[in-house]
Image (cartoon, rainbow, N blue to C red; front, side, top):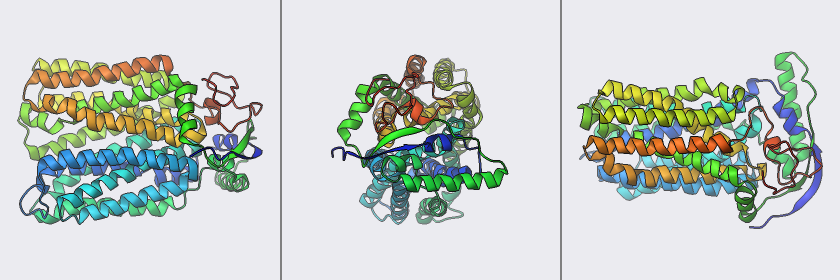
Amino acid sequence: MTDSGPMKTVTTRIPARLDRLPWSRWHWMIVIGLGTVWILDGLEVTVVGNIASRLSEEGSGLAISPAQVTGIAAALYVAGACSGALVFGWLTDRYGRKKLFLITLAVYLLATALTAVSFSAWWFFLFRFLTGFGIGGEYAAINSAIDELIPSKYRGRVDLIINGSFWLGAMAGSLLSVLALNTDIFPKDLGWRLTFALGVVLGLVILLVRRHVPESPRWMFIHGRDEEAEKLVDGVEEEVEAETGRKLPEAGTAITVEQRGGIGFGLIAKTVFRSYPKRAVLGLSLFIGQAFLYNAVTFGFGSILVTFFDVSSGATGYYFAVIAFCNFLGPLLLGRLFDTVGRKPMIAGTYLLSGSLLFVTAWFFNSGWLTAVTMTACWCVVLFFASAGASSAYLTVSEIFPMETRAMAIAFFYAIGTAAGGISGPLVFADLTKSGVIADTALAFAIGAALMVAAGLVACFFAVDAAGRSLEDIATPLSARKDSGAESADGTVPPPGAPA
């Protein structure tokens, strides 16, 4: 589809007004309504992996093999996530954040509910794909909305913690699977269905909160709804002033834009890859690096503990819960530093440090110096830093490209990273981690570590100084007039489409 063309020219201070807001109950509503969905994603991914053996048992109510659950169903979930991100990412940039983050959650809810009543393998496969389709769309719609609504001084830490909350869902999924698979509590054909039903219940609660989250005023004033955007921000400012008891300071620089209804794929691709080639390389490096590191560690997690450390398969969920908790602690405790120390040192530092620590872990493991407990401890340290770095990949691609392309940029890099991790990763690591040969598993760790270190080196040169800066300063909107005062990340005022 082609660019629908400009509508009218408007001058607004909406970005500056949103960025100078203090933290308030309104921002908490956004975080709860939009951010908690990653818990569902973590729950989904972990539960399916942990219940694979139960689904394949006689009497489960589903004629399916363990290989089909961890192979075909997992691949379809990944394919659905990649497809959903691209489809809904484009729709989000064209039709707005709110419409799409309601639609994507509805798709997830319906698909998960229908997964719970699966009666055959094909039904299970179909709705695993559609569940992933909804989740992939969520990544594009939610990350773009969050970054456009959260004040610039808090954007880094909030984005990291929200994306890191995936691991709260993973931890819950590990513990829930232990309970759901206990046949003393639930029959074989019921426990696994209840795990999916719980995801539906949680999703409905999130949907009730999400109905009150507004459309992004940044998206609105570019797409011909400037009066509505001004009224929305007026209301937020009144609410914040009443809550704090203080009058807000004057907003900063205004921006002048030529409104447009939407842009086509051609201009999106040209903007991302021709106008911002270094940023495109940065985004690809960060997503692919974290995808391979996580697959190197987690793809054969259970089999590594069982094969090399004689841990019973029923106890691996407890180990994974510990690792998931450490994954969440990384963004939680390090997130603030991305706003204070800065993006470049923190992104590069977390990638380089986690990759280097995984090299050390591979050496310890190959030397036979680790037990199940110390191996888990090593993974915890590695993933504490890797999780903050991986979350910063989503933050990076959501803030370094122009507003009109934001959701599509998130979708593209997410799809590439997810495909690398969910398709290429298993192909590379499956035989290595399941061979029973220590050196093979150590090699898998080393591959993931090397790609993480490489991404960290790219960040050293190409990461953008975005901490505390308005999104419009980091990447000038394509709709902005050259004389509007919006700056690029270099501090200049390039014409739309100029390199930065």
